[in-house]
Image (cartoon, rainbow, N blue to C red):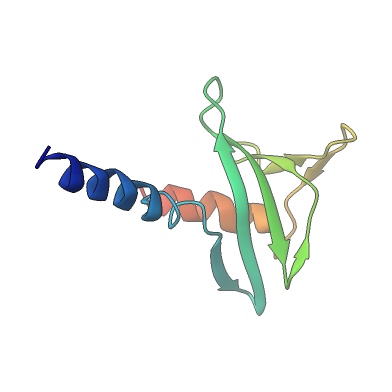
Length: 101
């Protein structure tokens, strides 16, 4: 009986403090005079150089795209493949994850 209260406190504190909250926060960076935030990102298991990401540029959320860091292209949801532009979020995504490993 004397272990019930500490166990209850431990369980309650586990649910109140979420250790994954920081990991789910967007990664933001000022890049070429634009604020780019990675809202969600998932690395491809098959093609490790590809990232499916949703980003916001200056507060405007872009549709999800697949960023190919090997070819420096992005695949849009409509199937259109575009080359990275000089200030493209794909350049930031690829350089960020290349340097953080």
